[in-house]
Image 1 (cartoon, rainbow, N blue to C red):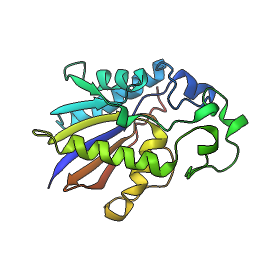
Image 2 (image 1 turned 90 degrees about the horizontal axis):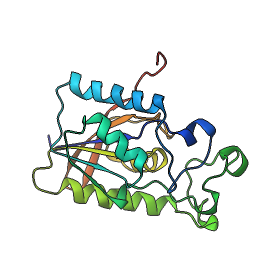
Image 3 (image 1 turned 120 degrees about the horizontal axis):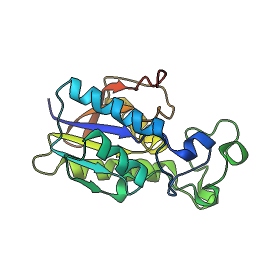
Image 4 (image 1 turned 45 degrees about the horizontal axis):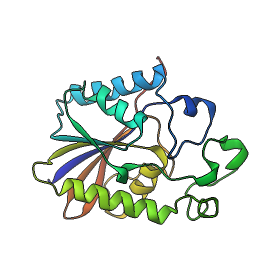
Length: 198
């Protein structure tokens, strides 16, 4: 069956609520974001899923999400390979002002602004996640990252995946369940927390 990676987006942040671009910059989780992380935790606990190891991007919003999901009981490592797209000089601005219309997938759209290319982000995510999953005793791994880079990575796995999802950024705290074997990721399940009653 192979190893299992639970690639999860962080909870809602203040910048999310304000429509502000927050690639490499950061903002804290909102109360809803913390509640979304608890919904994700309940999904894991209801299924009896535990983690051998956990990882997050260096951003506090991702690290805080890991701590909530694991109840602080699983030590985790922050890794730069799970960082969001770098949006260059667009960071900290309103999405509506600087990223109008259809810009997803990004391609090379951000490069002239000093940001990342999509190919660069996919390669970074793939190399990082392969390196993590090849480590000893990494059979069940939680990795908390970000919306756009996760979308790009999941899209790159489409040819090898059982489950196919729309090419869009996922809701906060969406869990992507991927089987891993010999450098290949297979998306088999996706859970989007229903926060409508929160």
